[in-house]
Image (cartoon, rainbow, N blue to C red; front, side):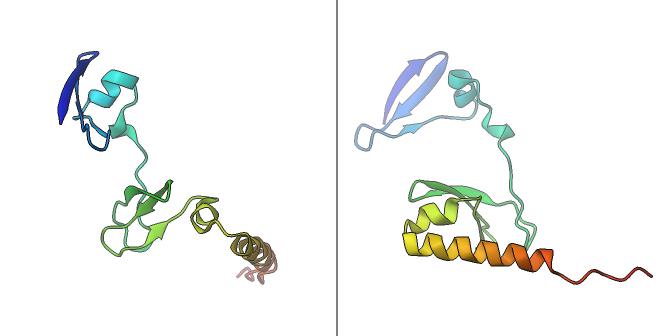
Length: 109
């Protein structure tokens, strides 16, 4: 790692992969972005805080406890990258929305 000073931050850079490491607070010093204020997704299954990770260029939320994954709108299509799959999802979404609209209404007591 090579250390470079920039705007009161010490940036550690890897000459091999060209990645950079920022210690706590350095991202805010350099960009004004506070990573501690990032949204935290809670797993709807087990209520554990989910971790954010990149997969095929898509940022996904993964639960470290139950290993479930949360995908935001459009992320499944990006990960799949297949037109047939996209068509399937569109048809599924359309059918699912019709089911939700046509659910029997609960009777009032």
